[in-house]
Length: 318
Image (cartoon, rainbow, N blue to C red; front, side):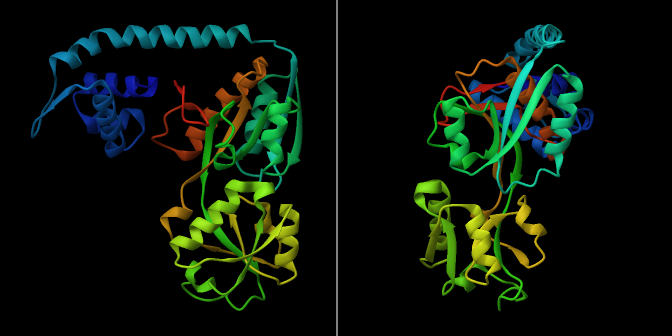
């Protein structure tokens, strides 16, 4: 049970109306209903009696409503105290960014806001490849990284906070015969050569390409390279197709065309903020908290604030 779910439950219990509560919380009514249903499932007991035009608390729901507000109040006071304790903190925060990630969206404002709020913290920004980022977290050379969540699944000592979702796209040279084809599907590219980071550079990315193509009904022919710069180089040389995202700097090249992939497997992947669980730099928690605030603002609705271990174990939700 998350603190966001508690907040949602308290508001519904106050209003005894999902519609009115959703309006007060600035989320959609179906999203609010799903959160309450998840909460009831996790607790193993119903919290509301849903009648045609009325909503009532169950006896169990009434018990929670009588006690949870004090828990929320204590949590908010604790967070405020922690924030106050960090006022004036001085130190450094080393941030690594995925080499092809386009920072001109909300990430730029995140860094600027963090720096303005914490002038005593010296920030460094560097770009690294997909495989290099988790290595540098493990080695302690970086405090925080911005990368694709799927690239961290094999790193159980790395914790992550959701930042935003992305979609996969087909990338090709504008001179490619398929660049202007209407209704282009991934299956149309079954006879094309794909340029992809090899397993040593990105095992997860390599397997993802194989999975996408398998779902599209074919096994791709792949030219393996070591760096994303090499992927782009081959595409610019009009040699092959690549899979990229809608948050990549590659979209700004005039000779590059990105086409969406109309498959469920290509949608709603996550970009995350990540750090090593044994790195106790106080600036990390401050940056992650601000990042989640930005994430909720950008995504706009139903995101719970979540911090997971990438192995899916021992997750902390707040």
